Length: 637
Image (tube, rainbow, N blue to C red):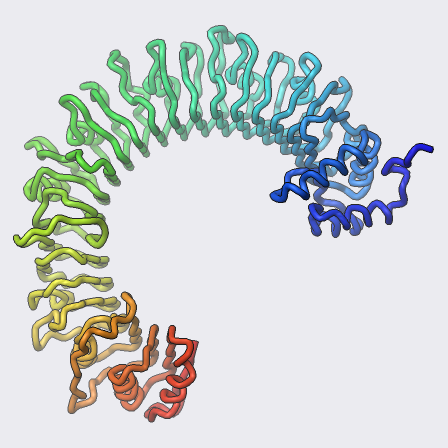
């Protein structure tokens, strides 16, 4: 007696079988029990090998074609929207019920062999199609399959063989296409596909042949706006090929041969605005016309070498440039390259090679008259003068970022920038060679408004008067002269971590606009520093104390003296206090008691600790402290 197939079993029993499978997702089982199926998956891909074996055995032993047809038919009746089928290479007969399914929007086929596609078969509402390692055994089956999707908008193909691209196989609605590690027979190529996609806007090609030696006389991708090419070789670019609407292109590990180059592509993209080139040769030694780059606004060059900058080459509209691990060889230099960008506004230079000098000298003719933002990340210079000249040749610079992570031949970074508004410096990572000479930063930026300064190596810091700074995050360890933060007289928001026990501003300095203060409690003299700032910041409303470096109980703390007069900010303005990493030491408890006893306007005081075993004891002691503000809340988290 023959065993019944799955289709002959009652629905309740079918659902019971699925629910007992360890690999079967609970969400799918739940969908099976609902009135509407939105997602049906046949997938034998599981992290557990045992579950995979059980599932494969179940599929092969219990799901013949009639069973798959039955389940898909059941899903169609319940308005399936997304369907995925994976059979590990077994032949799939397309379920006839899909021919009338008007709800199916997304179809994913993975490791499926399709023997034949009926000529009249249609996916009437399909918008998205993913084909992963799908094999078509009949001639022209893939093309017929695509023709069965008249409203297709997104196509993703991976490890699929294109045999013949027929011109009558039109994809009139396709807007996005990804071709990943796919192959073409004989003279077919991606270019052959493009001629049947009249509205294609986004194209991604990875390790797939783009052009062949025999292409149609004229191919114009009028709607294509984004093109990404990765891991492939371009031997020929047909002279008749054109992408007149292309706005963004990425060339990632692309090789050119036969006299072709990046310039060959640029010539056929007259409206290109954004270009990314990674591990690809940019300039060929052959002469070529570069007038097509007139619209380029953003350019990213990464992990490549520039051997020659053609004298007539210009980027007249380029506003943003990223140079990431770019080497200049021969007589070319970064200065030569930057001069072809007359209206450049944003520049990022990130150099990871330890032994390369990016900027040896700044020629007399060098100038970046429109540059507003400059990021120098791990950049080597020939010396102090080359850096200072670079800054001076940027007359309208507003934003400067410096990440100094190794010895870069600069002892003193002299930043003299009258137009600078934002400054970020990170000199806190990497191994350095110890030197006794003065090394650090001298900053003269009278228009500066925002500063982020982290320096754990310098022994010399000089801040000239910067009356416009309203927000600063400062983390330093060296002994500061008296004009350190004393130059920030208009500061409103200050985050300060100063491991020096000295007060980093001269006596008599006031901060009349300071409302938000964050202070690190790591240094030995933090309590005295806090008392000084409280006295000199009469309008302070928010105070946050935190340890940014962890506790070092062996460090001898400097005892603080309680001031004879209550600071004005405590009696009239302070509303919120947060204390993070509160340890409950005698000095911390004494400072907490002082603030709570004098902060008349305090609304909330929040304490948090990382000492779980001492948590309750510390909180009990804090609750017993006197609070002058009767409406204040003491919170713990």
